[in-house]
Amino acid sequence: LTRLGERMVTVDCDVLQADGGTRTASITGGFLALADALYPEFRNSSAHPLIDSVAAISVGIVDGRPVLDLDYENDFAASVDMNVVMTGGGRFVEVQGTGEESIFDERELDAMLKLARTGIAQLTTIQKELLGKQWPIAA
Image 1 (cartoon, rainbow, N blue to C red):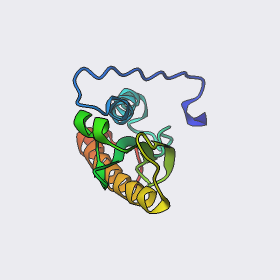
Image 2 (cartoon, helix red, strand yellow):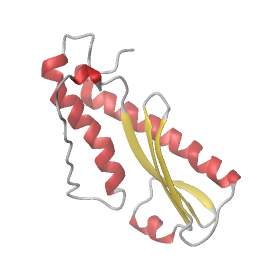
Image 3 (tube, helix red, strand yellow):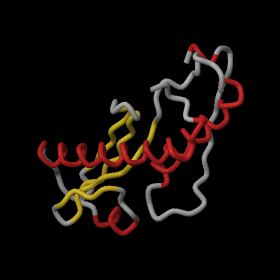
């Protein structure tokens, strides 16, 4: 954050159409908006303030099996519901899980986190493709 200098950044996101996952969509899209907003000032700078990307996805246990990116129907039917926020580099920002209708064990937790990691990697690839030359993260 010190690279931003004396600035305050607020990213406010309204999801206009979704089938569940509005919070995760806001986080994933919010990163795109922030990277896009910072591009004009930092396009030729090695001191870009974003040092990693951020994306979020939901996972859960539905009918006894782990499911990625819960839509409304799956979210409603899930016995366990979890949101995972990670950096593109694979570090966790937030893990928020709840046994909605039942408890879950370490094996199920590991399966959900593995699935979330796969989903975050896919979202990061999409973010990178969408931003193209505006991708702020140094290789």
